[in-house]
Image (cartoon, rainbow, N blue to C red; front, side):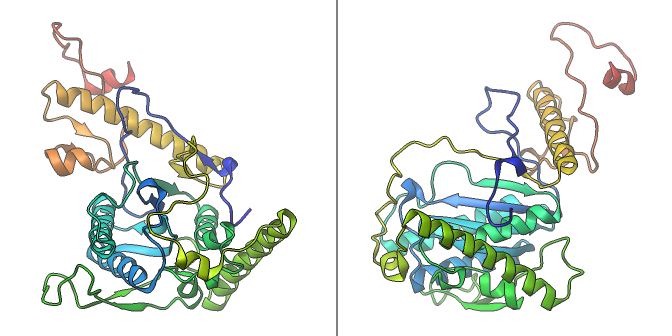
Length: 347
């Protein structure tokens, strides 16, 4: 069902090593992702007034241009933000670091605060496999203001949203905000263009058919949300209520601890989903094995395709094509037998 993420189309893959706090993330050029980041304590620090919207849009455009990231859709809610992007050159971590850091510094200056703007939990990074999952995630992003019963229609959201650009497929030019960014700052462009890119897998559609596809999917999701709202007698918040909220406030029920599902892969096709999860499990096994050998002093070990942190910060080697997980290191104190590498891998 388009417009809502279901458990059947998303799977979570746990790391095999419980001692490691976070599982390694595989970054491969050309991959499309759904990114989600929440504000600290779920506060309304992204409240969609004109200044906040300009900061978010400018920082997104600058980071996307700097790291050649294709942006397919976005929405900045009052306490979290969603992005659908394609990492064309395998620089997603740098893009995320740049965008979140610039946004945090600018909005902290705007709200006159010093603490962290973003939640301490990791940003959610979901790999979107197949064009069905990509379209579903885009509609989910655009529908956030409606799904939260803030507005009746997606186009009514006053904050940063790509809905109109997804229909027009045009670009928007954003002036550099006066908040935080000095007018004499020559390192940041005075204005930057934020382009919207068509989702991978849907390039063959003519513009009119693509526009109709997105419009009809959003319209159908809006009708479902309206029926549910009427059934449960829920009152819309509206623009006045959203903009009147103090940035230090949180939504009702936010104090309750939730056990949130943190998927790594989203896919609507079972075969593609199984293949993607198998690839992820193999990557993590190979990464753990390579990391163990690295810690034992083997600086020639090759990490699997998609390794970023060890390559970027420690100068480790990385293979340039998918490979079988490297063999486990021999037990300490015992000599390693001189056998062909293929024999060790098969054993």
